[in-house]
Image 1 (cartoon, rainbow, N blue to C red):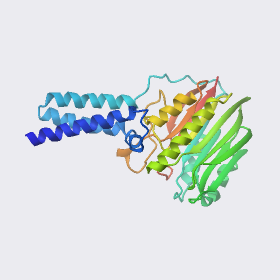
Image 2 (image 1 turned 135 degrees about the horizontal axis):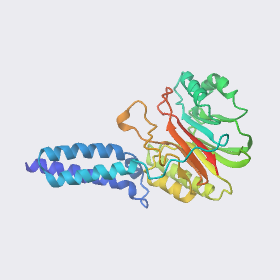
Image 3 (image 1 turned 90 degrees about the vertical axis):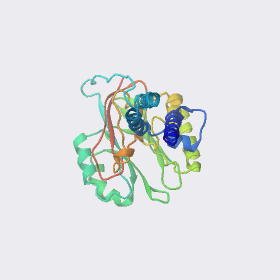
Image 4 (image 1 turned 45 degrees about the vertical axis):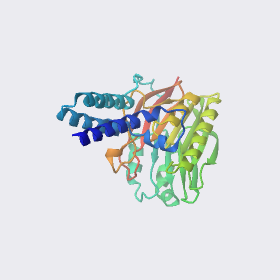
Length: 312
């Protein structure tokens, strides 16, 4: 019995530490960032622990476990923002962003989904030279396109497609393996919009986390000084629960397009127990979000994300 109590106490303490670690905003450690991404998983483990405690009639541990269930679930449910009403006819536009995965050999599902959703702006990530051959029919449907690939040792990059005029753009390589950023100034319904298309590095190691942190802060400060509305889309390799992501929103003034639309995990497609949202579309406050969803399976380890927006 004593051994059982020690195990129960260890599980509770571990879950509390894992659940609260994401709020350590001023402690920028790589491991804290990694552990902050899984509130749903912590909630499910806490639920199992609560059930065991109730079965063993351990009331206090059951209550403490129940608190963790509620605490972690509250991090992933709607923030309370209301879903915006549909914009006036002709003013709303759609953005589609997908990490198509460099090993993906068949892009037919991707092409079909783009045709079905009919977005005005498309961002494709981890595009290889082999992909470009399959993407030609898709690219031809968009009068404006930016191809920043192949880049780095992995020979990957991004393709940015737009039905709106691209007034100017610049590209930036963010790692030696092929992570990139494209900034384009678009004319959307007679309004200038700064669009950032990006693919941040996966912080598998502490050194990569430090690089990505600097890039997050650079982007946040860059956006904060923009005199026009901003849209940011891409693979952030970070969830909304991580301290660095919250800093990005706070400094830049952007809002997450998923606010009011529920939990929308995008990775990994092949293992639902670890699903987390790491692909994002962020917008300035003056941009309304009318719809936000994840797309269908396209043969990648990421689900696409898309949003319907309008500008006040």
